Length: 230
Ligand SMILES: Nc1ncnc2c1ncn2[C@@H]1O[C@H](COP(=O)(O)OP(=O)(O)OP(=O)(O)O)[C@@H](O)[C@H]1O
Ligand SMILES: [Mg+2]
Image 1 (tube, rainbow, N blue to C red):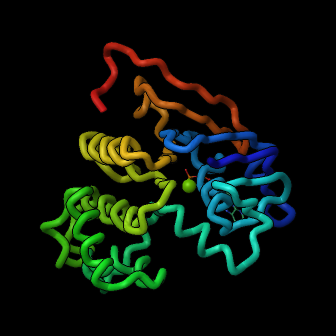
Image 2 (tube, rainbow, N blue to C red):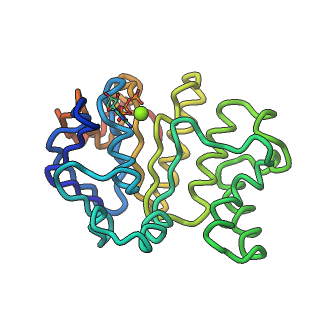
């Protein structure tokens, strides 16, 4: 479970990036976090992973009170959360396979065990044939799949996907949303941030909307007959 209770975040003396956010996401949910550029989506993700501390309020992830977590426990929290970064953060001098292996290496996973798991996630996201290539040899959609595979490597409870369709054409974007939806159907909680609210209109998913750091709506869309087949 992820629970934000009256969470505010102020950077320095200036911007109030988030303003008294109350948000609860149960295990196994799929949530779109939408809002224009600068509305606070990435800031919410960075608070959940304890990259940032809230100015006010409480953040609970699983059973952890994130802001109060002692330093040595932060890696435990981060292992449970797979992040697909807005700028991907892939290492250009490593192969796709090596990029996916990286969080496992850092977590001290046994190499033989890691190899099987990496093959599994490569298959799951549909890029197994590219594993020996370097990032520069892949398309934008394929690179998103690599970033998703890397986020999945340690079998997290939660995936935070930050604008994973940002630079993609419509069809490729749908493929990525479909992939995240499949991952969610296997039990992983998925939060996908996007500034493109229109794109996800008509999907029977929960949509949390932010505007200038405020949570302005939280709706579970009803299934329509015309709903896209996800
Ligand atoms: N490290 C920081 N220092 C100062 N201000 C910051 C910092 N990070 C974010 N902000 C500000 O906080 C606000 C929210 O930023 P955030 O990155 O969360 O927006 P976003 O919804 O993810 O936008 P986008 O759709 O462009 O990715 C913005 O006004 C931004 O300038
Ligand atoms: Mg952002």
